[in-house]
Length: 75
Image (cartoon, rainbow, N blue to C red; front, side, top):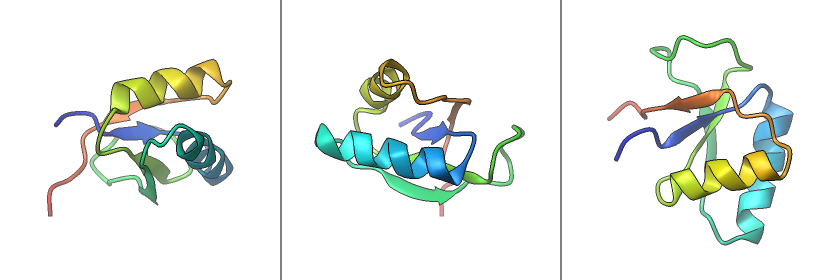
């Protein structure tokens, strides 16, 4: 999988985005933005393991400001 992190401008947006995705049965998890991601944000993002493209599109349609996407660091 690629680009399964959705980068957001604030932790408030991350919480709002998670709530929106739950309404559409899209699983997501708020997590710290990895250090290798070079983008100005609050330091939190959403990990969306499945349906990431659909999730990003939905969030944008609902007015959530998405800063971009990144790959999750593997443990």
